[in-house]
Length: 483
Image 1 (cartoon, one colour):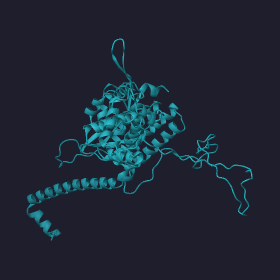
Image 2 (spheres, rainbow, N blue to C red):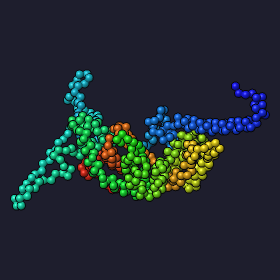
Image 3 (cartoon, rainbow, N blue to C red):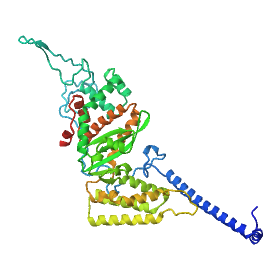
C-alpha cells in the first residue's frame, strides 16, 4: 500500500536528506518513463502508418496489397464522357477486297419444297473469316556443287548461305519464334520445348534452345556497345534497379534508357560497382532521372527525382500520420502537373507562384515536425532518429532544385516511369519463367531483352527484328533511330 500524507510528511520532517534523494530518484524515473512513452508512441504511430501503406501510397509492389486500392491518375477529371469521343475513328476487323479463298454456300431448295437450283441469286451476302493456315515444318535441303577445274586442278565448292554452318540446323523463322516465346512472352526453356513439340511436332531439347539464345547474345555484342555510346550523348536518361534472383541469390537488375533505347545489366551489387560496370553513368554529363537512390548522386551529372514516388510518400504520410502539409503538397504537385503537362503552359510568373507555395508548405511541415529535443538522461550517441515525415521534409527541402527541375526544363519528365516500365517486364519474367540458374543465362536474357525493348520503342516489328537477328543481320541502333 502507498504511504498516506501523514506518513510522507513525517518522513520529510524527520529525514530531509533521504526525502530529497528519494524525490530526485523519482524525478529521474518519471523522466525516463516519459522518454520511453514518447518513444513507444512514435513506434506505435510508425506501426499504424505501416498498416495503412499500400502500393498507392508507398514503394510497396501491388502484389503486397491485402486490399487492392483503386488506381489514381494525376490527370484531373474533365467534362468529357467516358469512352470514345465524338468524331473518333474506331478500328475494327475490316473486310478485304481479294480474299485468298472463296467458299460459296448455295441455296438449293425453298422451305416450301420447290427447287431453286436453276434460279439466279438476286445478291450475295459476304462474311469473311480470318484464320491462320495449318503450319508444318518445312525442310529445305541446300546442295552445293563440287567441281574440279580442268586447267589448274583446283576443287571448287559452291557457297552456302552465310547462316548455314551445320549439316542440319533450324532456320531463321524457327529461331525467331523461339526467341519471341523465350524473351518477349517469357516462357521457360521447358515450356518452349513443349510448345514446339505440340505446334510443329518437332522435338527440341532445352539445350538447343539455350544454344540459339547464346548465338543471339553474341550477335548483339556490337548493338549493345553502340547503345552505350549513344546513351552517353542523350540529354535525358532514366535509371532504375530491382532485385533479381540468380543462382538462388539476390542479385540486381539495372536499367538505363531513354525514349528510344534500353540497356540492361545484372550484377550482385546494387551500388556503384554495378553502375560503373555498365559504363554509361560514370561518363554521363546530361540529366539523370531516378528514384533518389543515393548511389546516383555520386556521379557528376544533373539529377531529376521521380515525383510519382514523392507523391506516393506524401499520400502515405497523410494517410498514416494525418499531417495536413503532406496533403497540401500532394495537391500542389497535382496542380503543377495539370498546368504543365495537361494544359501545356509554362508561364514563368505562374511557375514562381508554384515554387513559393512549395516553400510555404515546407515551412508548415517543419513547424508540424520540430527536431527531436535533447533529454538530460539520454546517453545514446550519434545522430538522433527522425520520423518518416521529417525525413521526407528534409529531402523536399534539400533537393528542391532536382525535384522541381521538370518545371523549368521542358525535356525533363515528371516521373521516372519510363525506367519503371522497362524494369517491370523483367519482374514479369521472374514470375512466369522463374529465376536464373546461371549468370550467363541472366546476361543473355538481358542483352536480348534490351534489343527487343529498343525495337519496340522505335515502332518496329519484334518478330521481324528477331528474324533478322537469326539471319545474322540484326538491326543496328542507327537503323532503328534513323526513321
